[in-house]
Image (tube, rainbow over all chains, first blue to last red; front, side):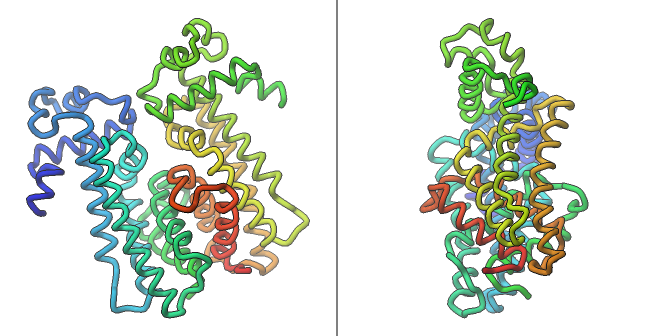
Length: 200
Length: 200
């Protein structure tokens, strides 16, 4: 990854271990119920040894939120097939995005639910990444609208619902027989085509 | 409401004020980041005065979770029209459920996101209420499948997605021009019919 990535997220192996421990702590006790001291203890580190990597609990939340949102954006961008028909693009983008939420449901849950704890500038950065992800989906929805392949009530509302449906996977996953990412991917690709009125 | 309701939720005005303050505190600081002392302080009460109503923070979370889930179930049951066509029933049930999530988005967010903090028995009670709500929706989905009005990929998967779509309203609401419950209700009724392959 880039230098900018390293600056925000932290490029070292130690930093990656700290982020993993932080996701576990935040997932179990919430952001408010966690201290950097406890995250450090989980790794057998002193709080002082963690400090050069992440100077505060908020910095750490920002790093895991940035990494998670940047990876989700990358997954969605890579899943898009700009030269293909809109319905093929939509099935690919939503199928992969939903699968990513399933594969990373604990991580995603932390960074979706604790966003309000970020400081203003960090929050804006994360909202920017989310907006880029939404824009990929919106681009596909608009392409299908223009080509006539989709019959939409409202491109903005449908895009919002598509994003919402995928993001919420992290809340309930796994559930019943929906316990693997491939099943989620197929189901959500199909549901997305239904939402835009392009049932295969 | 019934005596059973009073036992679980707390029937007095003082108890209702405590629940409202708890929702505000939990919404702002998370369950883990909140103390009963702070909830009491918000009301100008002593922690000792709160104790007869709710003996612990967990009891208080359970009371607001029970009340919220029981009201949502009631809304969904009242919105159903068992004698009407399945598409009319589905639009009514999902439209109202989504609107309820919008109207009560802070409350809903707390009780969706902090469920893991409930003790085992309380958690089971809440899961039971959620399952009843899901069963109302599932009953409508199945009725449309049997009558041939709906063309479904998978009744379980579609029901899961319908519930997920509605519940997630509490995470993002309000957003952009989606800032009133009536707009949400109309959009989601339409989306629900699309998901079951019964576009009006």
